Image 1 (tube, one colour):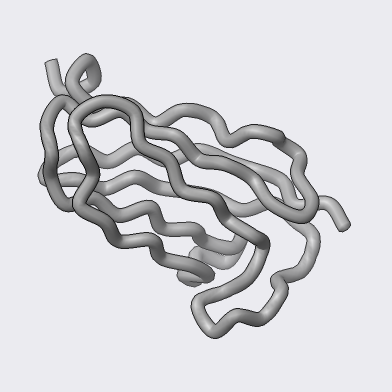
Image 2: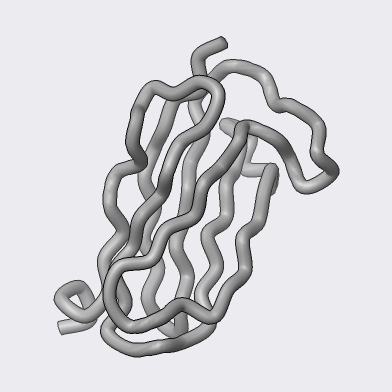
Length: 94
């Protein structure tokens, strides 16, 4: 199944301040995006990469795509690669 080939792990640490690591597993090398959303569903930060087979990770420093710090609160992070998509919650506490 697709879920066995790809997976999105819970970020660590969670809650976090000032940064957190988001890990995901890929069956093969492929384009992947990790997108972070605020509670309103607006895109805060996008990480685009060619992920390698196996475990990959991105580190989010609590800043938006323009380099500005975001507010404390609940954020969603989503992994998208091909037809796979998975979303989880995380908390930024300042």
